[in-house]
Length: 142
Image (cartoon, rainbow, N blue to C red; front, side):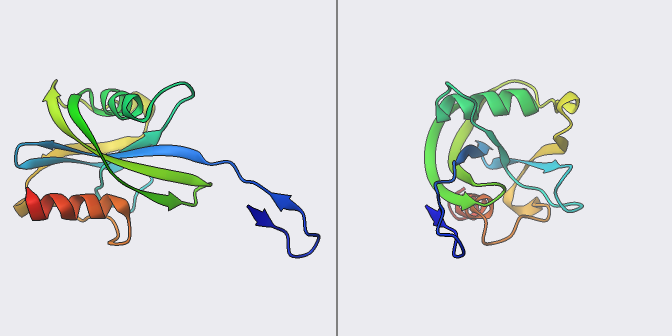
């Protein structure tokens, strides 16, 4: 809860849950560049959870919508508060299960996406982000 220091009004802000996911295919990971990211910075995919869907359903839907892929073995990774606006990022890893990589340009979210190996990574997100933590975990174990 938040309390106004001037009038004492108590406010219970709502959270907007969002999923963020690292998709792997063997020794490769899927990274994408969103239009709103700084130029040339790539990250993992993310999206908001819709009313009535589970977190795992949101992960599947977002990947299907944004890049046309099917995934399996969805596993919880961690979470991070994200203040844009009042979001909670819930992180998952998953494995490629099929489909052809095809960016959904109609949604105007992604500018580029591709499979990368540890030795050819593009510029990555900040080390403080859960996206980077997932990528670093893949680098360490993948």
